[in-house]
Image: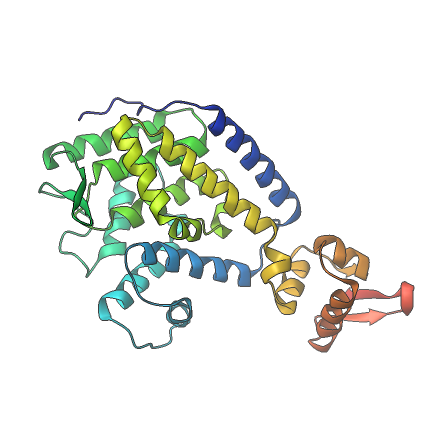
Length: 321
């Protein structure tokens, strides 16, 4: 199958509603959360991203083991699984060095992701492949001779298309999975490259492990790919992926109060540039925090010498050293 310069899909009312909701949530996050992100948040999200993306591919390592590897600690686990994680850590650490519209960067990322795992890391496949689920042949990829042309066409679409980044990222993800350009590593490359495309316009995606939701809805992920294959266009997959992105943004908006510990909240708050503040200022950032928890957080900050307290009762202020 030879794809046109613009891969086929329809804009449905569901897609329009999701794009509108996503745009609102990104605006809210940018306004309230992302002026300066906590290093702890960045680290936690990177762990979840790597864990979820590799779990989809059958990796058996836990989040705790991946955390240990990120911290350069030794762990006991299957050699292949450990190498997959170490490779992924290197790639995600260098994400800002890749240009999403560069096919050369795409091949370089695949090499780093799959180095030591397959002999053809960083190279397009030279044989035919089919995707089998259970005993059923789900998808026969295009002939290997067509892969270089199809991928070149896809990168031309990335460079020249003036359509919305949100849609473009989903279209690339689907079309790349359809072409199946590598012998192995296609799934993780599709998710990685969609993140990279989104990052070019929305910095929030550095802190958004939407792979977690894909891993929790794997059957829907594969079903949307299969239905898009059947229809000959990526519409159903776009709807699925935009739904995943919207839900992930919603989770991030609720993230601080559900997941963050006192030290993370304090670190995040101070990273916003607050030099002198009161308890009300602190609670305005963490809107669902009780006054008792806020007071405990601020007491912890004083104990850790992150700031000092002056005044008493409702006149109390905190000054960053």
